[in-house]
Length: 117
Image (tube, rainbow, N blue to C red; front, side, top):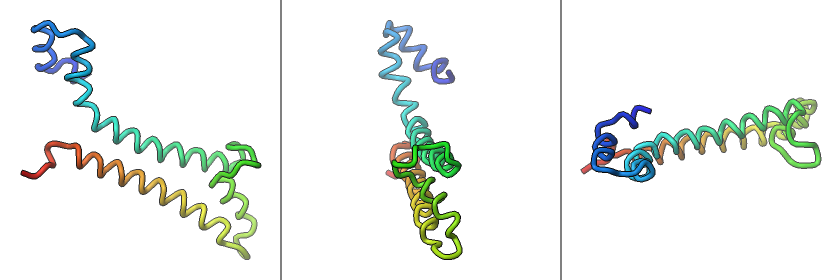
């Protein structure tokens, strides 16, 4: 909404640009960076939500593999076979963390204020 009221959008309207052209040419390039960051963070949130639901038994049905159900399966064996819960838990953490790092890296590469001359 802030970009919609920006001067360059008003100037494009004054010269007769259509709404579609204004959105594609002026507004969309300015929202790509926040959109990419939100998408990468959302992927991590979806993975954590699915793992939590599967851990509680409300996620993916049992014949299909899920990291949350793998962690839940090892819950009773934590004294004797700790690796059953540890490795799926580490996989969840590494995938979510690497997705967040990827989003930060993409943001840094696409942000014109961070580019060096």
